Length: 427
Image (cartoon, rainbow, N blue to C red; front, top):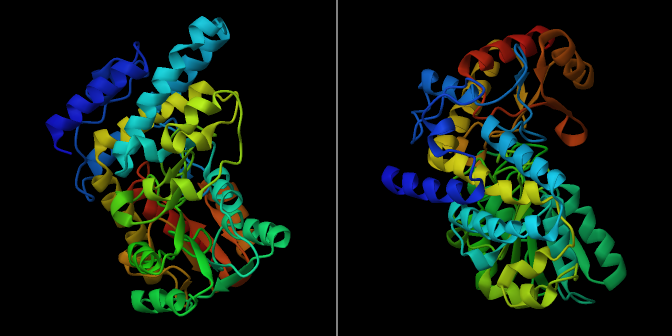
């Protein structure tokens, strides 16, 4: 989207989502919190002055370095304030008349999300998180004895164990693919899945990017080969929605899920379910309630027929999309890639014997960096990094035992250096 087009889009979008959210107040001028705005169009990945201005949009505690985007992200001021404003409005007047406006605002949020991920509005359902989206697909397909579902053994439990539970009830089989550890070859990843497909395979379901290793799969190629064989694809985008510059129609998946509270830096308990138009009649809704008749006629809307929702969170998805569009999805992807690459390079230089579960090649990775330290006491190191160094991250166990660092657009290169120094201290 060009800068003038982005300006017109944001002006229309924000004018509809909240009358009191003046367009230039957080994008071009000083906000009520005294935060300098983010200009239209992202800066270059190495433009630290620009990204400092982005960081200033977040209310992160002074001195705290948050590198835990794979789990939970803070929201910037404009998103926080939009949620608070709508919440206060409902608490002030919970009448049907006052709340009637949320129907139109939800459709504006749907339009914003569709434009953000490269889909049509009838392909977007606003869910509560990735887990709900995954389970909507797991429980909504007609599968039975003789059918087979192929999974990645690095999937999140909601795209892994959930299939096992469903299979016990309906009798289909579940097979897991193990990919070569530490591979730097996309062909190896692709071949591991293709060799597992059989004439019985009905669904291929995988994480776009693993939360336990940081490996990114060649999703477009896997979706293409699955489509050639009449196999449905579910892509769990929890670690790519809000990080990658996504175009879901081009990606080629049948279903895609994502959470607002991670890389999208949006409202909590909101998410996205993409259901490709051509596949909508293959998926049954898990929830049916008031308003079903209208939802059934509107594509993917039939997968969000859940009763009372947190309207403030749902409609604020529009403001979150606007925040990303203001900076530019491609600029965000480039910045996160630069931060993660610098993190891997500097950890490698600073810690003899360090080992990465995450590929060094950015094309096979993202913002999730999982590193195994020579010390090996990763749980204790994780605690010490927060208690002693004010660094929020995660520890991993099992086959991917290590420290997980997930930098995002609110981190700086200086924070990367501080994080590396802290991790090296305990290595």
